[in-house]
Each structure stands twice: as C-alpha cells, then as structure tokens.
Image: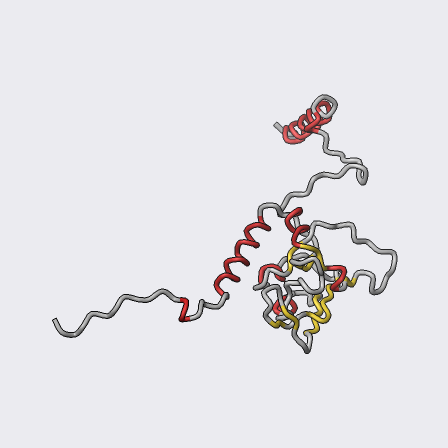
Length: 195
C-alpha cells in the first residue's frame, strides 16, 4: 500500500513524543550549558601534550622529533627543536621542543599525530569549547596552552592511560643499563676437553 512508510515513521515519532513524558531515557534534549551529556572515552577533539612531573616544561614527553609535524595532513603543527639538551625524567640529556604550536582553526582532529608519536607525548583532548572573539592568532595554541599533566590524561581516559604508562615503563626498563660485570653471578665452568 502506498504511504505505509510515512505512517510507520510517524508512528515512531508519536511513540517517542508520548514516551518522552513518561520515560526519562527517551529525553534527548539537554539544557546546555547547565547540563552536559557525558562524553565517551574515545571522543576526540584537538591534541594536547602530556608532561609527567610537576613542572610542565621539564616533564614534557615531547623530544621534538617532528614526526607529528611531518605526518599532519593539514600541516597545522609547528615545532622548533631546541639547540641545547635538557635531562629527561631518567636523567638522560634530550632535545626538547623550543616551540610547539597547533593551529586549531586548521586541525581536522584526525589523530594521526597521536598514532605516529613514538613517545606517547601527544593525545587527543575532550575540550570542545574553544571559540574566541579575536580573529587572528587566538586559535593558535602555544606549548604552554597545550601542556597538560598525565593525571589529567588519566581523568579523561581511565582505560587507555594506564596501558600507555605500562608501555612506557616497559620501554624504560629495557633501556636501563645492565649491571656491571663484577656484580654478575658466576657462570658454570666449561667442561674440560679431556674425557
């Protein structure tokens, strides 16, 4: 019969309309900004940089390898590598990003920068209220704006963050120097050639 599809669609609409007065689960309108729907853990908006210590500058995981800058499709990441080195969290001298800027007016939230980072230094944030009144330079986020603590990362990604920390701990354990030869246990003597 002609028009049954329209009637079925109208029935669904009527059922949802009437049900919204009796079942709270059917309410889909959120009184934003007073009320906010919870964002799923895999929600992503714009990138941010992670630091591990109390000092955002000293504990930044980024070593300015520039892989994210090269792989970024819209080319919205700007990195200037330092000329000197600073000690990382293990005390090893490491280059660092003197300048790390992301132009969020160009960023397409593709997450490629996160996927290619070998140091787990860049992750996707859930902050989406980034509108500005200024027209120029206001949507260019500097390193100080992008730096957020590992604790913050744990709060927005409670399942992914511990996995990342475990992976970094394993990598750090592999890089630890071997104990000196004098502290190594004695090996069994080799069998003699005469039998």
